[in-house]
Image 1 (cartoon, rainbow, N blue to C red):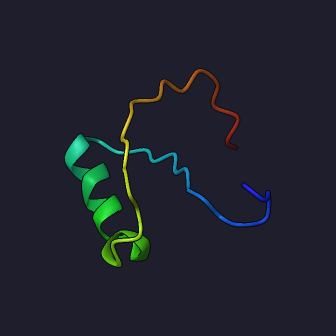
Image 2: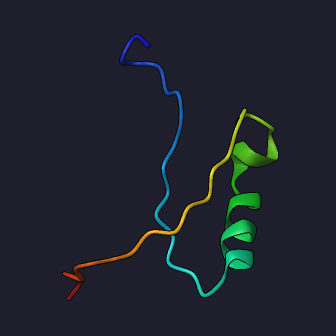
Length: 52
């Protein structure tokens, strides 16, 4: 890792179901191009909501 070359991505997605998250992922241009060696979808528990 040379600290300048992109090696991955992280998305935090608010969705009603796993199917919605998978659809979001499958619409990603990098996914469509087959650029990811692995994809991990994990739940995330939001503890603080600072949105106005």
